[in-house]
Image (cartoon, rainbow, N blue to C red; front, top):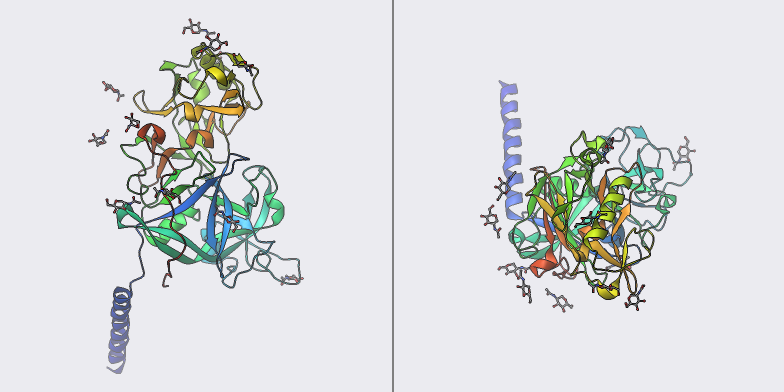
Length: 431
Ligand SMILES: *[C@@H]1O[C@H](CO)[C@@H](O)[C@H](O)[C@H]1NC(C)=O
Ligand SMILES: *[C@@H]1O[C@H](CO)[C@@H](O)[C@H](O)[C@H]1NC(C)=O
Ligand SMILES: *[C@@H]1O[C@H](CO)[C@@H](O)[C@H](O)[C@H]1NC(C)=O
Ligand SMILES: *[C@@H]1O[C@H](CO)[C@@H](O)[C@H](O)[C@H]1NC(C)=O
Ligand SMILES: *[C@@H]1O[C@H](CO)[C@@H](O)[C@H](O)[C@H]1NC(C)=O
Ligand SMILES: *[C@@H]1O[C@H](CO)[C@@H](O)[C@H](O)[C@H]1NC(C)=O
Ligand SMILES: *[C@@H]1O[C@H](CO)[C@@H](O)[C@H](O)[C@H]1NC(C)=O
Ligand SMILES: *[C@@H]1O[C@H](CO)[C@@H](O)[C@H](O)[C@H]1NC(C)=O
Ligand SMILES: *[C@@H]1O[C@H](CO)[C@@H](O)[C@H](O)[C@H]1NC(C)=O
Ligand SMILES: *[C@@H]1O[C@H](CO)[C@@H](O)[C@H](O)[C@H]1NC(C)=O
Ligand SMILES: *[C@@H]1O[C@H](CO)[C@@H](O)[C@H](O)[C@H]1NC(C)=O
């Protein structure tokens, strides 16, 4: 009897606790954003794109390279990492297994510092520009990001995740052709701890994000999480194609053929098949390749075909790394033939217009902005950033599809049409 009363009391306490919790959530409900946005800047020296992420306590703005195929966020912790909220989970903890890390870190220094503790967990981190690797400590710290409210109608306040998971790397890993001042890499790949997946799980919005990379280094573009941009970011419909996820979380799409000026480039069908995606099709999307790279034989055929379709324009000696260049005095982005990547069927195309296919390599010389990917590239076609700029590209991981607008300039808009508000308003998340 006594024990049943005791049980009743326990149950009652547990229930009232639940009621209390839900009430406290209702009365001081944490602000729940409909989506999030990060500003994106183009580095004119490398053509690559950067985002500034607000992290740590006190908050600091940290410039990171955007890597669509990176599995997580990593940064240099060896230099000036000061934060009162830094936390490194113990090895074999749930955070470590979420990161896919099953090994324990060892720090040979006598004084612990961010990135260097004993019995935390270790992960192998890869530099996307050099493929160099290093062992990094799995860590957590606060991250703040601008919200989008009212179903994508406007920017809202900044929201904070207190325990964002990332990898804390040695500074030696940041060697390579990075934009100046870069402190790490923001990985957007399909993986349990990549930036879009952590944000979606934390805030409970759909696993969906969109890239809108700016073509100008003067005005920012954006990455949107959880919504399809802001209203008016792209007007009109997107063209959708299936996405397949590679073994490392990379994004592939089926490019079955290429057309120039509406005429098919005479490519060997088998050359467009990627063995890495079980015969799915040859396109991988990358934000660490400045220009689209084509497998060597595809590159040769494509370049010759493009030259023939542009026969009115005088060619000049190509400038490395390009294979075909023209005298700019009688070629402009408006008289360049369109290039179509034909996807799952002939009606579904990603059209590359002149602003995304021709680049002024030197004053007076414009070049076809495609490069030779060699004999054994990661995919027959690696679609690079120059071809992504001013295109709205939506990664819908719920429906496993990619939506693309083609050039927003032909819809009289661009990726630089929205001003981010200043960081005045913060909403601190409750936990
Ligand atoms: C990004 O952050 C760095 C370091 O805080 C700062 O120097 C730079 O001006 C920021 N860039 C932009 C475009 O806000
Ligand atoms: C880690 O442990 C080793 C001994 O196994 C010790 O020499 C070293 O100082 C420790 N490092 C830290 C940061 O505690
Ligand atoms: C989106 O549309 C709403 C209503 O039309 C408007 O109030 C809001 O300012 C728009 N947002 C942006 C960022 O243009
Ligand atoms: C957009 O797609 C919807 C539904 O598929 C269709 O009804 C509409 O006509 C399309 N609009 C344009 C501008 O193509
Ligand atoms: C197409 O590829 C096959 C096998 O790789 C090769 O034997 C054939 O010569 C190629 N055809 C052309 C037109 O390049
Ligand atoms: C160039 O195109 C013309 C027709 O557009 C075609 O007759 C000719 O064979 C092509 N030349 C090459 C080298 O592809
Ligand atoms: C471009 O210039 C070349 C040589 O100056 C000339 O032969 C050709 O007709 C010009 N093409 C156009 C489209 O103006
Ligand atoms: C481009 O054409 C103009 C006029 O035909 C000529 O003066 C100039 O030297 C050419 N430029 C190159 C790089 O060939
Ligand atoms: C492509 O579009 C044409 C014309 O709209 C249509 O007749 C055809 O069935 C479509 N093909 C596919 C594979 O959807
Ligand atoms: C874009 O603007 C130009 C000139 O302002 C206009 O001629 C064209 O129709 C517009 N295009 C669209 C898709 O609104
Ligand atoms: C963005 O800001 C710039 C300068 O601060 C201003 O000229 C421009 O009109 C703004 N654009 C929008 C869409 O508000």
